[in-house]
Length: 404
Image 1 (cartoon, rainbow, N blue to C red):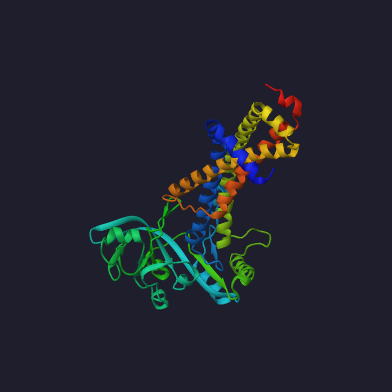
Image 2: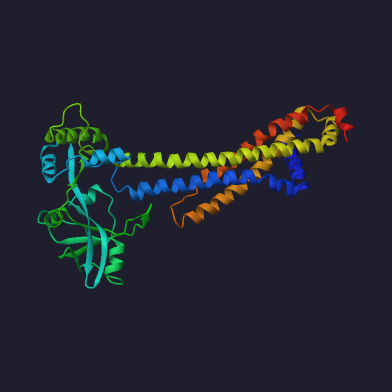
């Protein structure tokens, strides 16, 4: 039998039992729908983390008191470290030969006022003037700090969209005055809207020169030092080793002791995120796998019932010259087609879920995910149909013809 004949017979068999075929598809539909939806959501989140959350350029390393905290033990250990100070920053600037650029940042939280309007608990970040080249900071309007403003601790600020909406609704904030702990600052820039990321509001932000923050707002946690190698990505290992040596020597850290600071890079943040998303993906794949196994069992059971119902038809086809492999291919085609239709339904359902989720979290449905869904459905049907197809092919033609 040709492929066209096999498809025609398979479609005819499925149309003959529309309700049974539809119910049989449910397990495959739910399984494929879960796979496609999870792939779309995780892909969207990965791209979002890469482009929006990780604001470090790929060739920048950050040396900080805390680093990346993965457990409660890591946090307790980090709190015991000495903060990195501006003295450390000056030593790195003066001594690091492999550093092409050295910057710093520090963080605080404060209430921001403008006239009678105020916004509490605003994260305030102090940056050196070259931070705009070390980080991914997008401005919708205005400009970043100049080196002169950074050197002299100028009272200027860049605000996030939520600060603008709260303090200057329907007004251009550039050039206006805001107050932080009683100190007036002139707004010189407006950050582009970033939205919420995993529960964190990225638009509730205020940036000031680091020198201004050190004059007005003190921090026990010190600063974080940002470095970029002279040789770009190829120099990351070299610059990491040199800055590590400088910081360890200033702290008189013994040779065999761990670093008294943390090192953060874009790749490290992305690696941490990938490990988190991989765990979530594994759990969801396990759940969808159970649905696919249940769907495969249901398909196999229905195909066995079909073999019994069509025993005489099988005998007649064999009597007319059909070979065992033709019978086997026929039932494999039916089970695969049945599951592939379930895969189509699962892809559609997964796409609808991804579209709905994209209104809350980033989600991206790629063409490859559609192919994965269809292939998963077809493979499920193929495996489920092996045993029923083999049973049908083994029926003796004479016994099959007189079967009732």
